[in-house]
Length: 162
Image 1 (cartoon, rainbow, N blue to C red):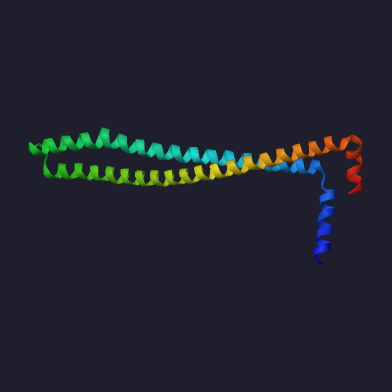
Image 2: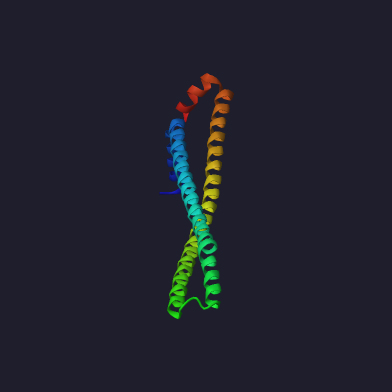
């Protein structure tokens, strides 16, 4: 198959393809883009919410549980109100709380990174979808201008000639 045959085949294919096929294809593409945008929006919102919840959880635990209890332990240990075993037990529970907070911060960082990636992908996909929509609208306007310029009699006879 040479270049001329490929060109002739493409020309015939273009002639066979109707405007309605183009419009239905454009609708399918827009529907797919809309689904992709909704999916990315949902994922980005979910990841941002997870990251925010993790940071708020750590701030709550540290500010309202860990720091006040640690200050109480330091004040009472200075007065020698605790035995060594009690002090070790309290310090071990505080260390476990710090470990959990560290894991939550790490998970929040991962969620924030995924949220940022989803947000960037959302920007790119929505921009691409907008350009596709503009392109489809321009094609529709071009077809309408062609029909107006050719007139009703010429527009009806033109596709038959191709």
